[in-house]
Image 1 (cartoon, each protein chain N blue to C red):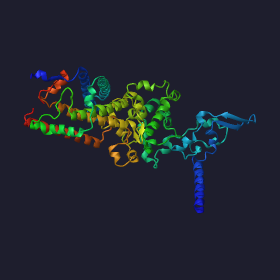
Image 2 (cartoon, rainbow over the protein chains, first blue to last red; image 1 turned 180 degrees about the vertical axis):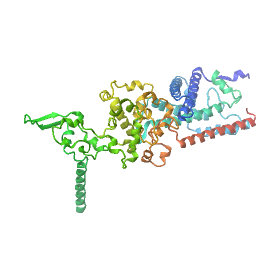
Image 3 (cartoon, rainbow over the protein chains, first blue to last red; image 1 turned 60 degrees about the vertical axis):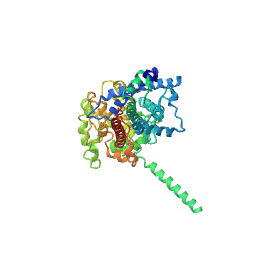
Image 4 (cartoon, rainbow over the protein chains, first blue to last red; image 1 turned 30 degrees about the horizontal axis):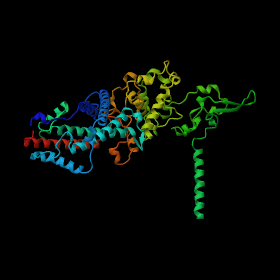
Length: 210
Length: 313
C-alpha cells in the first residue's frame, strides 16, 4: 500500500483556522498572563500596560475562535469526537495511558488507532472535552467578568467577587497552560516527532503506522 | 414560671433604661446649640416686632447629629471650640471672625495621640502642593472636617470603607466647584477626563485611594500628607500591580489592618485584601503550581529519555 493512500483528510480548513487562532491567542495569553500575575517592580517580562492590552485583545481573539469552534461543532459532525461515553470510559483511558507509559516502549500497537471515525483516542477525547467544554468556557466567562468588572457580584460573603473571579481565571489559565505543555509533547509522539504538527497545518493525517 | 416571667420583665426594663441612657449620652449637652443647629428651621421671638418668627436655617450651619456622634470629637461640647458667647441669640456678628483652633493647637505635643504624629503630618503637609499653592489658608479642616472626622484608616477593617472615606475628603473639593473655588480661582479639573488613561477608571476610583498615586509615601506616617503636584503623580501600573506593590507600603501597610482581619488559616491561602492583579501573589498557590509544573516536566523528561533509549525518536 502506498503511503499516500494511508493519508486521510483529518482536519478540515475551519478546524485548522480555529486551531491556529486558538494556538496564537493562547500563547499570547499565557505569556502576558504570567507577566501580569508575576509582576515585579524590579523586573518585568514586558510593559504592564502593554501586557494588559495584549491580554485583552488575545482574550477576545480566543473568545471569537471559541465561537468558531462552537458553530463548527453545531454545523458539522465534529462534535461527536468530543462525546465521551461513560460506560467503559475509565478502562479505555487506563488502557490508552498504559500504552503511552509502557506499551509504546514494547512496540505494542496503539489500542485505539486513529481513523476517520475515531479522530481522538479515549484519553484525548476525555481531556479535550474537559478543556473545551469546562476549562475554556470557564476562562472565557471569568475573562469577560474581569474585562467588564461591573458585571461581577461585588461580594461573595466576605470575599470580593473580583478576587474570586480572578483566582478562578488564573487557576483555569494555569491548567490550560499545563494542558498545552502535555498537548505539545504528546503531539510529538508519532512516526516522526514533527508529523502531527505538519498534520494540523496541512490537514492530512498518516494512519499507516502509529 | 412566674419568677422567670418577672425576671424577663426586669431585664426588659433594665434594657430600656440602658437604651434611653445611651441615647441621651449619644452626644454631650450642647448648651442648647443643637436646638437650632440640628434643625432645618429656627423659631425665635423677634425683639423688634415682638412676634414669633419661624425661619429656615442656613444649611451651612446645620450639624448632622448622627454623623457628629460617630466622629472623633463626638464627646466635645460646642463651646470647647467655639466662643461661649454663642449662648445668646441673635449671635454677635463679630463672633464669626473668632479664630478657631487648628489641629496642632490641641494636638501639638499631645502625648495621648503621639502615635498619630501630628507634627510630622504638619511637616509633610508643608511640602505638599496644597500648602505650596494656597499657603496657611489651606487648613487641616479643608480635608478633615472637625465635626465629622473619623480615624477610619486606623480603626476600620474594611478596605472599601477606608477608601470611600479617604476619597470623599478629596472629592469634597475636587468634585465640588463651589468648595474648590474657595481656595482656587480656577474651575475644578474634570476628573474623569484627566484620568482617561487609567484602565477600568470607575473600578480604580472605587477601590483605590486618590492618595495612593498622588502622595509621597512616608514610612513613619500611617497616611501620607505630602500631596504631590499632578506631574509627579504615579502613572506606572506596575508601581501597584507588582509583587512589591506600592499598596503594601500604603493602603495595606497597617499592621492593625492585618490583625483586624485575622480569619484563621484560610487567610494564608485566600487573602482578604482586595484583589490587585500582580500584587496578589500567594506563596502557597505559587508553590502548588510550581510543584505541578515540575512534576509534568519531570514526567515528560523521563518519557523523552525512555523514547531515546528505545530508539523511538
